Length: 346
Image 1 (tube, rainbow, N blue to C red):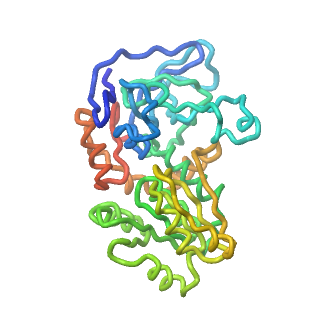
Image 2: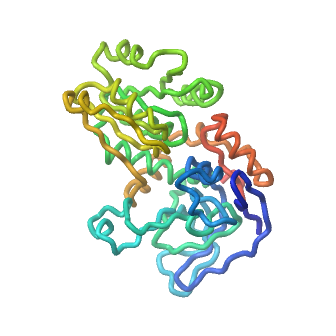
Image 3: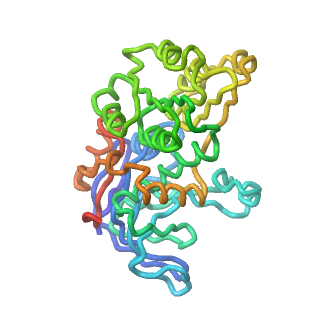
């Protein structure tokens, strides 16, 4: 079978590998489509915080597929079932897991990082990590269930967004765009900010989804916030940039009594002046990963057409040249590259 393997920093290639066999408690999945996300890009560059990933490694954790074989002990799933995987596996034994906080498990492991992933024709997984895909959701769309679940957690579980709120989403990457789409679905007035390089492709794509945008290299974001909100400030700001200045800017443009939700993972320390935070009683919250219910929310939003997956994904990249997808993503040319392995129009 074919598989995309990382062989070193900024080095990925298509290789032939052996088709895996499921253990008694596993299923064998024929991978249909698999997405590329920010953490994959960081791992591709082998940036700080990702050097622990063993190389060579089959990458990929966002995927959809069809079960083709089940182990002898598996119940509840059958060959032919269309599924997605929750790729962050929790241990079930630590304090956080027992406290209903599995998304911040002390002993978590990630498909495609701690173990070989889904950039392959086939992969094996324990059924407890699977979600059935509704019949009305194409598998190429279902491949972005995991990042959509991160967005549903950020908006539904971790934020105070209500209909009519003025909401700023910093960063037009895949998580930012999906956060914007979810907040927009609630009736919030959403704007997505980006840099000059994002204006070539990502910001126009966001506008195509019916969401306002601002290029912060052409227009002062504080002045824009004042004009848009009559000098009050945004009710909620989501920082999905993964840059240390994101939180600092968010605090400058959120209203007194408003909320900042940090979703991106900055690679450098942030210098936040806390006095305006305290005096403005600004709620600074965070959102990491997702839960079982967030996955189900993501699938339902795609099922009822709330999330325009077709307007977000780009399936034009070939598995034969995987590096081009990584470079296009890092150059902000696309929002969400999706590889097709055994894909068709389904």
